[in-house]
Length: 77
View (cartoon, one colour):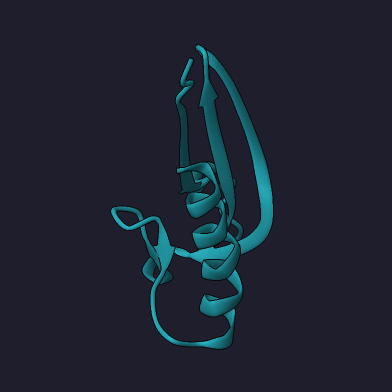
């Protein structure tokens, strides 16, 4: 039996700080159960692409965020 896991990453904008940074969270769905957790990074709105669910740009911070996000997507699919 094949089970399906849905993964999404999002910027938790309601926890935005005064500097405009908000923590990034991961949401996992499996068999109608949901798990949400922080991935340990904060990012500003203009540096996060929600459609691609990745940090924009080529900065060191964008690479530090995109590496585990890409790895998680690859492992799940």
